Amino acid sequence: MTAPRFPFPGNPLRSRADWQRALLQLCAPLDAVTGGQDSAVPGATHTPRVAALESTARPLWGLAPLAAGGGHYSGWGRISRSLARGTDPTSPRYWGEPGDMDQRLVEAAAIGFGLALAPDRLWGPLAAEERERLAGWLRQAASAYAIPDNNWHLFPVLVNLGLESVGEAADQAVTAAAFDRVEDFHRGGGWYSDGPEGSVCDYYGPWGIHFYALLHTVLARPPHAALSARARERATAFAADFQHWFAADGAALPFGRSLGYRFAQSAFWGALAFADTPALPWGRIRALWATNLRWWARQPICEPDGALSVGYAYPNLQMSEQYNAPGSPYWACKAFLPLALPARHPFWTAPEQAAPAGPALRAQPAPGLLLQRSGTGQVTALAVSRTNDYVRHGEAKYGKFAYSTAFGFAVPTRSRDLQGAGFDSALALSDDGVHWRVRENGTDARTNVEGARISWNPWPDVEVETELLPAGPWHLRLHRITTGRRLWTAEGGFCVPDTEVAVTSLDTGTDTSPAGHALAESGGLISGIRRLRGATGAELLRPDPNSHLLWPRTLLPTLRGELTPGTHRLATAVLGADTTDRDAWTRPPNHP
Image (cartoon, rainbow, N blue to C red):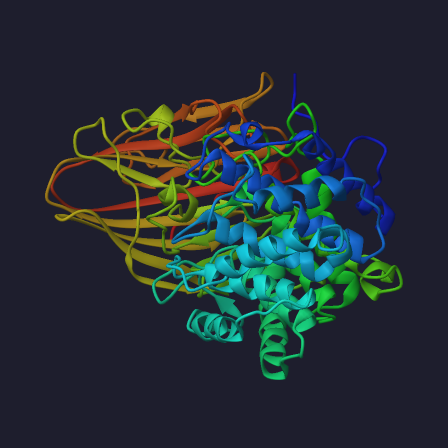
């Protein structure tokens, strides 16, 4: 049985009404969730009762805009009862008190947002004592608890907006302190890192920091002119860069953590519309939003009952984070914010507009990416980005040499075997031929339109200097390795789906011959890797099933080699293209 797609057949996903129906279809399975026991599997770092809170709160990111825009949902009674029981210490379904580093602080923000947009659905049905308990619980969640020094600072802002919308007291000092701290995360040009200097730039900028700041411009009472002007100015600057993370077919760049939130990737575009900020032409904003959601609608991302699964392009726990519970994927409902807008808003009335022609290469130094767009609209990011040590598989989610809208990436499943190591778009090194290391961080990272460079040390006596050069649809990887020990090397290209009709080609080469390549063609994609210098063999690996974000079974072209102590240079050409450009394999780029 294959996982069902979203939404169910028959919805063309064109009109505002189509998107309303799609949201209702996604949320319908949650109406059967009645208690914490329904949210215990798969497990996460937070307890089942907090996972139950997550399943209640996260759909509000979409349902509250639906209500604000006049849409109907039959499950409001269930949600308001959950709020009443979840904040009642005498109830067996009590969520518990918020505390330090607590997932409840995250979900409280969704409830605050829901109160701000749909108070008549959430606050209105509650009795006086239930309102008092809910307001008290939210104020506690907005208090000065210890939190991660990142986008979490803005969760109390959403809680306070919700409290204010229903006439309850809120601590404005907390809101002011939150925006002051997040100001330190701005890296210029509208780019935010998810934390202070040294933190990564990823989707938490657009679907977190920008998203909350734009909400504040609309919902704050009284309005805050200075914060609003800053939020709109920076969102406008960021939009000019962020649009290039999206391929022509709607796929967004798979990069960084929390990718299980799926079409939250396009939440930023909806937030621009909600804040009436035309950073790009309205038809372009609408197209970026809609084509991304339609791409997701073509993926088997739902459980058999229609609920969003944990995973990326299919249900997959291998790539998930330690904080992903059953309700976690409903963070994706942030993408439905435009449902709050009236049908006459230009976001809904402007015809969808494709991207204008532009340079094929765009350097984005803040996240450490060099974007390379193919003639068919695929996006490949050559990466020297920082990695995230907290997140599971952080080295795979941030530390690969290339990320692609068409080819995705893999995560490791085993450390002692290349089949399970997930070394696509990476150079792996081993000092015993069994255990492997890849880049986990680096120094002296530089990015411009000519290429990207980084130095990294997998061992104290091993230094690798890597240079990545664009040569679309190819890219070149040049490595200078200085080692005090014997090393084995394995360098992977892109994965393709492993199908019965896959076409492969292999030339193992020799120590002295410049030959040596591995090629795999499948699923309309072609992936190849050529030895230019240094490697001594080539092979086609079949990585462990369910290690890849896009496909359960894959093929991985790989080069192998051995190094003695000393200084060595490796040079590799990597191809990632669709089969309309099959001839690219016969015209490899020249080695500079």
